[in-house]
Image (cartoon, rainbow, N blue to C red):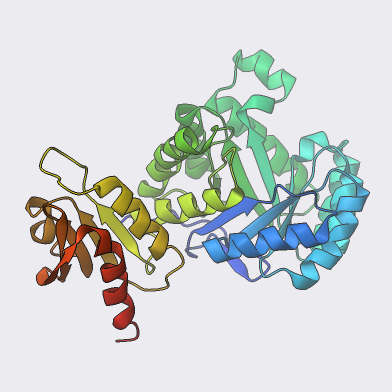
Length: 353
């Protein structure tokens, strides 16, 4: 099992980050924050998918003031995402935000940083410093020539110093870039030199297909090295897809237990059923099922139940039919069109056993 780096622990609402706490999954609403009902509906959907913490855009005072009503009914801790205007951070803190995400260097100088730090201290709210390879300070770009891991680390240290100079140390840190290679290098440097919990993510990854691959490579690499305390998969997609991907990355890294583990084999010339459609149908039916089980969908008897003997339940295709099996033992033969229904019936019949 991967040994995780020990970092400082902070609390975001009721969720602990760092210090050996379980790695949490985050996402960000794409609603207008001042549309309270729409935002709460999306928060509920994210929570159902496995999200632990949600971030809201706060571009103006209307959005900041809406946090009060959202916080009253939200099942998840709220992070206020602030850029440029320190007054928005102060208002969000007063309205009940559980964490503030800022870049201390872009909210108007040390005096404004001190005001935000003071307000967050008053409400016991941590601050996430969000370093982004695409928006580094001009002096750093001039020094390094282009975004580098070293430039990002120097940026992070500068932002941390601004907060530390105000007596504030309740900090989380992200070191994101759109390049997987740069992201991984920056987080490795931060993990080696800084004690703060790390929020992992590759930014601007694109749409769901490519974005999940980039995120899995970047986030997964770091997690397997013991680096990272909370994650967000950033996609140009429904935020629910971000959460599902994040949960699966944690499961693949051995950092999240429970829930259904779904496995299926690649199709080949031996397959004589519509394996692709069946696998999608079973996976959809399993979504949301709260059982600690492994379910396998295999295309032929070569891959199952033999190679899938560790699965709790599964099907193996034949010619226009399939074998329903449980823990490697055949239960019965089922016509192809009934395989998904029969498998789900078997799983549901043993719920609670």
